[in-house]
Image 1 (cartoon, rainbow, N blue to C red):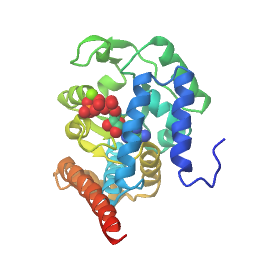
Image 2 (cartoon, helix red, strand yellow):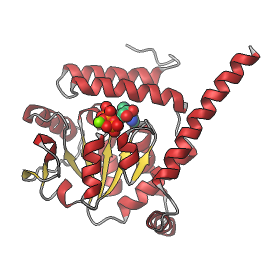
Image 3 (tube, rainbow, N blue to C red):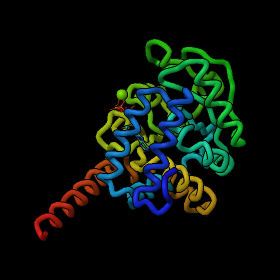
Length: 253
Ligand code: ATP
Ligand code: MG
């Protein structure tokens, strides 16, 4: 039991959720490693939603609300960390929720689907085919879900699959704490923030943004006034500032 007054309470709860989900066969062992990398980058970014991440989250909300077919792709880590948040996210964005795994087994798909359904999420179960321009099972997705989406949110996605989705003409929104990853660089829009903070902020933005602001954000994105490259540059600057503050503290000590 993690004491609530522990200074790293939220981070430790997330780690415990990942560990329990790995033991339950929901998170793949590779996902445990990916989570650790995310934790390290969260430290570097200051474990908070930066201004630039908040702009990306509001833009993501606007892109979802103006999409024809918005889809949230859920993997094991996303289910383990955010199953409680996805029902609200689905209601606020109108997104179709599809379980799609990099390390795909039918057993894990079923376990994740069950977990989400227990939390009140409507899980899309369409016909599955090899539809993405990738080799092996990584190409699998549903015909009337991910394949036919125009805007897709892929939290913690692999770089190759992100690239494949972008090459199909989709607007791909990634959530990735590592601004240097291939996913972050290839996505149409990257939210450099921790997954649960990001999903909550997008859900709240969908509820609070007015129509004018939604349209302005969507236009700024299509007119390239909001660009992924700038968002990633800002994330790297935020990390550099944090590191430089840490150095200053050391010099003063
Ligand atoms: P690339 O995109 O360069 O191919 P990768 O395939 O090595 O990167 P993964 O190992 O698949 O990346 O990990 C996915 C990414 O998700 C990592 O970059 C990690 O920083 C990030 N990540 C892990 N946990 C979280 C989290 N809770 N919130 C946000 N990002 C996270
Ligand atoms: Mg990769």
